[in-house]
Image 1 (cartoon, rainbow, N blue to C red):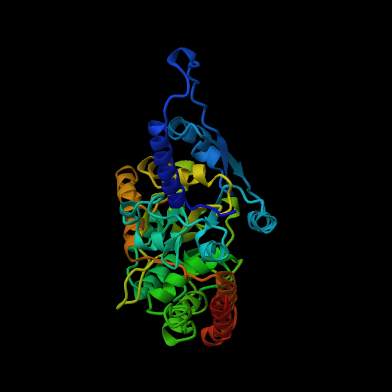
Image 2: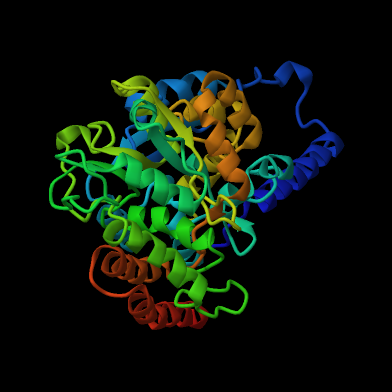
Amino acid sequence: MKRFSRREFLSFTTATGATLLAACVAAPPTTSPQAEKPAKQPAAPQKATIELWTPHPLEDNIKITSFVKDNYLSSHPDTDFKFTRVPSEWEQKFRTAAAGGTLPDMFAVDGINLPTFASRGLCAELDELVVPKKVLEDFYPPALAEMQWRGKTYATTIETNSQALRINVDKMNQAGAQPPKTWDDLIAVGQKLTTDQKGKHPNEAEFDWNAVKQWAFETWCCLGEGSTWMILPWIWMNGGEVYDPGTKKVTIADPPAVKGIQFLKDLVHKYKIWPRAGVAQAGPEGTFYGQVVIMSATGAFDLANLTVTRPPQFKWDIAQFPRPADGRFISGVGGWLISANAKSPNLKQVLPFMTFTTSDTWQLHTSKYGYALTGRRSIAEQRLKEVPQLAVFLEAMKTGRARPRSTQYPLITEALQQAFDEAIFGDRSPEKALADAAPKIADALAKEEAE
């Protein structure tokens, strides 16, 4: 059976309705007025329940069911809404449902996975009837890049995040230091802030690297995509890249990328201001909140903790990442999206709801979850009036970058994670670690070209 797109459906129903109307006008009456039966009441619209899956606790933080009821369902009598949270083993459950053809009408997508899902026909294309051009133009370019694949839009945003440096201002003031603006500044300030149990600094002869009380800096050092997301900007700020999007030439082992990773390695092993893997311990509150680390890279999502959920017991602020003397601040941009199931039997009801998720009403409401960015410039600027600490994160959106857009990104990020871990925290040189990653990334890109 032919499946109509939303545009075809609307065109078809309009044309058919006009034809039927003309036929009714031309047809002569078949009964006398006295024989006419009472007019039938119009049938109630047939309802469809559209279901959304996410790993996020949207019922807890944005009260999604009541919000949709109050702001959407009353004007769409043909639609009911159901939210289902799938919190544990999200990726496995999603893949199982996709393989079995049991995906819901809508589902959450991490931006890095959109090219993979869209290329395999899981995500419905959202044309201008669903997401108007003027709305798309309101999204920051890197946020829009995560919503699209090969120039077509396949998702809308739940949240978008850029990156910056959170700073313990009290500790900074005690050391008589200022937030670093350049890489050289980071080294100098870092050696003032890092102390061992006897109060010695890393640039002093008696400093004990095995008994550090307070570290100056860390970026995300865990395994998983989070580490790649946080480390890539240090390559970008130095003029490096993973690969050339146009030629697909892999450049991760070229000098600019190697130098960026070498700088991070030196912060750990040479300047001793970033803790080695597993060394800094601060209990469940974490290294920054526990004041074991003074400067820590984070995303806009952390503003909820900093301002409302569990404000630190010290004065804090947000600053841009330090950058090379001749470079500029570049942040990674990423987030979670909503896609419509391309094979949903309820696309007639789903697509208008997808339009709603780009509206001012939805975007402003959901942005209050975690104080995350929505991706839409006009909405983010409204939130800035309420949350001034967003300012640096909004600046980051102007020069930030989406992660490499590839259907094989899971293979690419696996190669990057291994190389970063070995080079920054291990004993391998950045040259060798990145040289080993390069052919793995090239193989992944070759698979993409062969699809």
